[in-house]
Image 1 (cartoon, chains in turn cyan, red):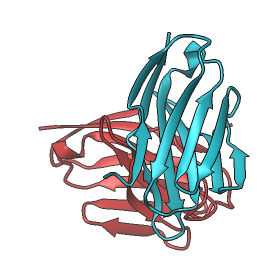
Image 2 (cartoon, chains in turn yellow, cyan; image 1 turned 90 degrees about the horizontal axis):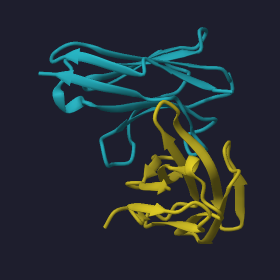
Image 3 (tube, chains in turn red, blue; image 1 turned 120 degrees about the vertical axis):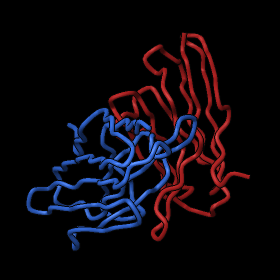
Length: 111
Length: 112
């Protein structure tokens, strides 16, 4: 099994729909992140969590929310999806010694 | 504002050549500078990283050069191979386990 698992891998949804992207990890790391990847813009931080009770906004949090259900689970929600949220979304974990481990990504299309 | 700027956006290199990707940063408090490699359909994976107390770090064919005074660092891929074709991201953070700020990415294509 992968260290960081993201579901679904691909999703097409309609404008205005609520959608949740899920992430689970077996690394035992406290720190988890959600990034968004767009061509020419790199990866931009949406939200991050340094432990179960800690949630922080990243540089592009508007239109998104997160929930840290347990140390191993960190989900990202789009309350009312819009077309410019079409992107590749990555979940990651980190620790002090080994740095980041990324999931394989969720490709989201909002039509 | 973009705290980490990466160039070029795309790069084509012949097999056996040297690939060079450059990054510049703004915040002198950054303390950790990794490079990530991403293949299609996969998440980024750590390739090599450096701290500002050294000017160069080499791992196999991959070398990071770091210029603290210029606030720049670069990735050199020696003897580039078609299997190196991927997207490369530079990044910076205040510490190794902290939140990363990424550059825009460079799509490298190594031609046989």
